[in-house]
Image (cartoon, rainbow, N blue to C red; front, side, top):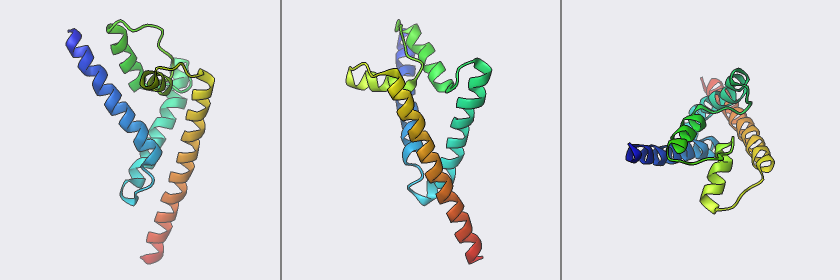
Amino acid sequence: MLMIYRILDIFFVIFHSSLVLFNIFGWIWKKTRRLNLIVLGIIGSSWLFLGLIVGMLGYCPLTDWHFNVLEKLGRTGLPNSYIKYLADRLTGLDFNTNLVDSVTLYAFLIVLLISLVLNVRDVARRRKHD
């Protein structure tokens, strides 16, 4: 059973990290722009609405599931944030939680705005050419 949890840990690191990268950079390519905006909307809704339901703004089910796996592997003292966990895991440092949360929120808002503006522009251009 321990091997399965290790495989799940690797899966979550790869999948969740890839999703974070897509959130940050998915707006760059026209072909992924609409999907990027949809995913950002889902993430924002999770952070807000699921967060209100579970009592923790910024709630992400992927983080919850991954941290359950890590607990099965004996890890304790996990942060509330996947980004903090990942930054700490990759660097061996202990980043300030408030700093990581602030950078995460501002980066999210910036890429959401960029994605929204570019998607609106793309729709306006398509309508203009029709």
